[in-house]
Image 1 (cartoon, one colour):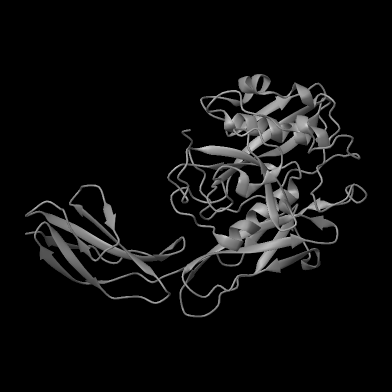
Image 2 (cartoon, helix red, strand yellow):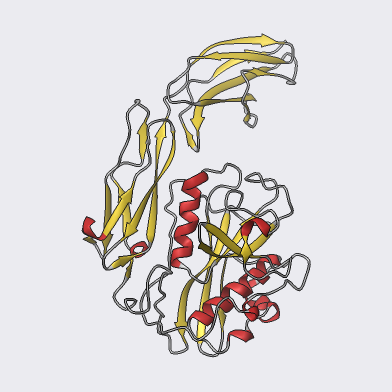
Amino acid sequence: MKKKFLSLFGVLLLCSTMIMGEVSVHAYNINKADMFWTQQEKNTCTLASAVMLLRRKAALLNDADYKSITESSLKSKAWNGGLRWDFEFSTKNYTYTVQHAAIDSYKAPDVKGEAKKAVVLSWLKSHPEGVCLYARKGYNGFTDSNHCVLLTDYTGGLFYAADPAKNTSRVTIDKVCKVTIENAASIWYVSKVKKSNGTVVKTVSSSSSSKDAGSAIALSDAKMSLSTVYYTYNGQVRKPKVTFKMNNKTVSSAHYSLSYPNAKNVGKYCITAKGKGEYCGNKHAYFYILPKAVTISSLKKKKKGFTVSYKKVQGNVKYQIDYRIKNGSWKYAYSSTVKNLKSKKTYQVKVRAYNNGAYGSYGKVKSVKTK
């Protein structure tokens, strides 16, 4: 499935839907059999997952027309050789908007371990109907064919999901193909619901009850800013100041709590804000500790290659060596000895340091002629 990727780099991950209307006590069980769906064609796992997503959302809103949501009815609105990133689908009483969002980069998993788990949990808290979880072959350690499942909930310390290819209902995610939280890179989620009269429907996070739903404000609707996004490594723990604004007014820190990482070494770090009081849901912001520029100290030519020496920088980093024939395209390696180049050609070389999604600046470009 070919799709353009929305990078998280430097971008905040938005974690819930718009809030503007009302929601009532649920008449339908979102885990009953007809809320789950088996894909009708070989490569429609994303479409089938979207069917389950929308049926469960419709059930939460007491939409009696939820059975009209099928692969066939959804395909004309949501399919173009793959599931569209953004689409709308209407039943008799509601119009549902579904959007795509990235968890991390396909090529370099920027968000890992507990930080990634926290990001996914924040989506589930804001979307009790679940989210479509997508993994792509060859990226984030995923070796199976591209696949999508519906991530339904997190209960008792376990993630649960439904796999449209296996005709499963709600099971623990370890039983669902090979899609995991760690190797998934993106999701689809219901971002907005409107009644047939145009009124936007308020949605309630899974951590809120219908009793207090009318007064809760989604923290994700506020603008989250950091005092500093990019730091240069100096060996000290970095802790940027966080500010929230709603309608250009500063939100009191009494309405949210902050969870900071131990940000000392070079890397990309996530700050998690959790709403409290009249605010609900979570929001995340990222900042970076960057290494200093790397200076090349010497270049030694070899037969069809070269060896580069450079001044190491601090911050628990790795090094990337970029090289090219003048005016050619840059290629890169991670070993200080580069082989299998063209003989008797002059190569331009530059080096930078990196770690965990944070890349430093390149030092001065130098040249070497291979033997």
